[in-house]
Length: 122
Image 1 (cartoon, rainbow, N blue to C red):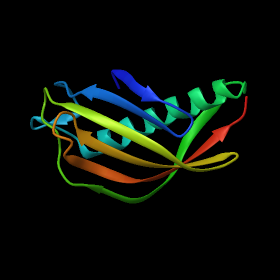
Image 2 (image 1 turned 120 degrees about the vertical axis):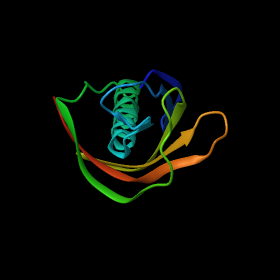
Image 3 (image 1 turned 45 degrees about the horizontal axis):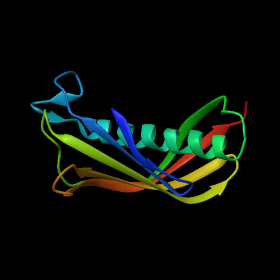
Image 4 (image 1 turned 90 degrees about the horizontal axis):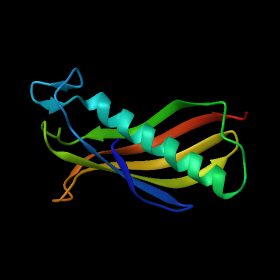
């Protein structure tokens, strides 16, 4: 993730430019990297939500579940990906979010799914 574009208590949006490297196989971003981008965006969301309510940062967070994840397209090297994560439910120590990866500019849906994270308190 290169930068956070917007954030509040219910969602966060980040952006990433796909670069040459081990995660860009055959000129396009590997599907697993889309999961990682969404997980990193969710981690930013959780950190900002904790700071807003005065809670300490977590010791660690783990992706423990993915449901309905589908990849519709892979962005090419040089393209920007917009990651959007929206809170579904917080059931401490679990956080459930919906995530979407979009092609920045066109808004074309690249991938989407529901993610469950375990967040260990400090």
